Image (cartoon, rainbow, N blue to C red; front, top):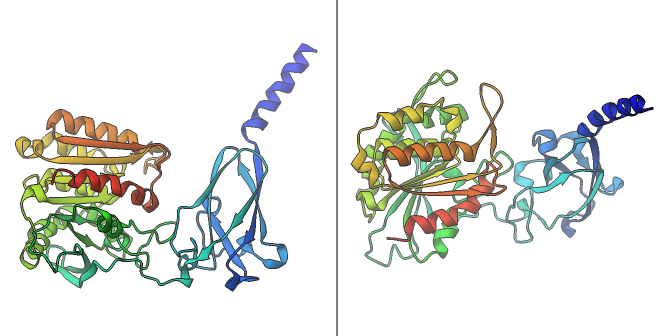
Length: 388
């Protein structure tokens, strides 16, 4: 009997480890103007594939759909849409929000109410202070053109003030949902709204990334590596420092000194920001390094940290690092890396070698994406401007 008992236990354990569940999603309300219309669900269960026929939710099925074979403890994230990223669900005020989410541990039914559809509201969410400075600003270092945005504080035209300047990458994602290109929908950072509400103002210059995401990656890598044969990051940084910044300082009322010149970005934009601070420590006084893609850089950032000689200039800089403790990214060589572990390691070397002012924020549950950077930006901006 005892032997038979142990056999039962050995069979039962693998079954519990690989338990799978069925999740039933039911929409019990949506805007009156769209009653009886079909729509779709997309999410982490189907790699965020928009308008997948099998995920169509129909009135004659009471807007119910089953998602089968969901593994145990899976973080199910999802959104509703009417066929494209431009027709996502929204709040009743027309703003996009984070994905809906649930951790699945058993067969589950989830009831949802859709408050609004994004395309029923004006496409642009940019404040009146946001302008396109140039639709095709020339980058001589790379022989290409790029849209550049500029945020001017509300009192810019009525005052004689000079302002600090924050340079940021991925400009199309900073101010306006109409131009943003998030992986799970067009979520903008809300940079303009944050500064509108702050008593401390600055100018923000946003540089679009190239429409070709491959070129974006090339521009944000400073060094080549076994997975990246081309790296134009040094030229891109040279453009910001020696072409764009002189233009901004000439055309606008800026405080052009190091103390009032900042650089910030996220993901690969966070990586190139880190390099920008190290390579131009006499230009950028404060750096916002959010969710930097250090794991893609094949240890090159550590070589940079150990080879630099400009110790005094870097000592006088300020660095703000952000990561979520749930930012698990796939490594090119296989396996996963935790973003906050990389940030902790890199800041330790930065502190040891140069000892600049470092502020590090690790957010519990934080993930990789525009929604989380939108949440992180107000605290970063408060830190950035508190001593100005």
